[in-house]
Length: 120
Image (cartoon, rainbow, N blue to C red; front, side):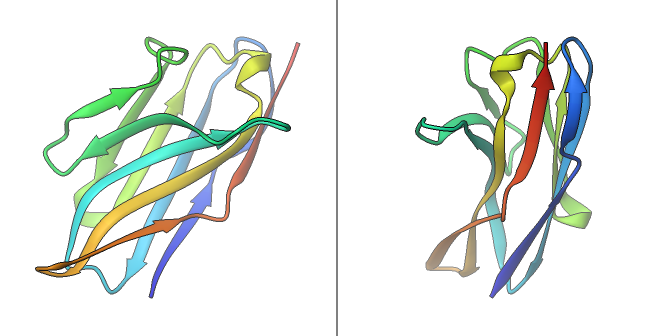
């Protein structure tokens, strides 16, 4: 059983910054990738950013240049630095982990979600 503990959400004004953190713990043989997704009211969950074991990153077009994803392998933790926040960034942000519990057993886990609200 793998647990993902998220932190860092909150209420900010347009143009301000927030930093999200997600720490993974439990039975992990190897992490393949970590990432952040978000879901706004009435909308589908969408990818925000991902980072692979080799530090290759991928961003949604809507956050490129404003958000930065990074990871601390020693702590099994992924971060999302969000700058120049806009009201349209308001959503519940979910941490995602794609990992292996053994050489041939991939798994995927989600965090509980953290609310980010950006006021205009």
